[in-house]
Image (cartoon, rainbow, N blue to C red; front, top):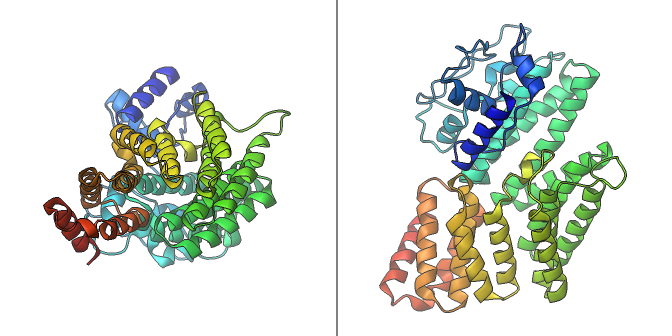
Length: 433
């Protein structure tokens, strides 16, 4: 049963019906078959419902929260009884409802439930158990899924409120030592995620603060995985801030943490993580003009990527598919002024990228527009710009992508006599008005 469900989950992920890799184990199924089964996580529920053609309730699972109608407006949470703070009353609904409400398309009556300040100010001693921790983690996963589709601007505020709730529970909650460890781990991961959302929303000062806090938390805990992730984001941000040498230093530090991923001798991070670290270093070398170091790091990235995925892959490298690594190499080659090679890579990246990674596809397209314009192919630049704007019309709100589009409009000014160029610039002007 575990193998069949895992195979189905993989097929659903390839089809875009799941936003992350999902695996099932025999132990997990035994727990679900017990007298008091835990409620499955959202992704697991989706696969179970597909396999059995039954709702979780029909399968015998008692939901810890009422199941909202995804087509209805998001309701306000019930008021907890006096003296009791029920975290589950503000649990995050399904990802599609979140995306609709966050973008203002869901017709909701007011603030999203988990952003209501009262939720993060419960009384001292609020009881926190494994169910509450799982709900906090599920909320974080939904935030990540929204970020991949729409960008950090959409999810920044609700993620900030969510982190505030976790920190409140860490300080004021009542829990066991084991739950305390889990809460601390969740807080550290959320802080780094918030740093990424801030970076994508072009809130660079706030992003750097969050990433610095996330890195400090990782160092204090000896959490090599969290440190590795945070350093790769800092490297990516440093490129955009015009500090490529700093990006190389961050990436090399990430490499050292990745080598210490496990406590066992000679154990290191999974190949996908090593590939991400290497391509971050490569981009730094490209921007500094160190060609040999750049080519060496690109080779290391693709060599690690070719080793495939493993069961130990963290969720935060799920985005690094072939399309994304191709895009990252293309962006680096563009910054190294290898525009012809960059165009070929970015064209391929945009062509093969999954729809569920719309933000990443938007970035590959807008960088393609820049690279083709640098090659003098104005018509191709306009076509890539128009395709990027189509994604914006569908809800993409990554500030990084929008900033690139604004720059593209300026770069196209010398070609304003062309009708396609005028049309694109007019459309861009309407976007930024």
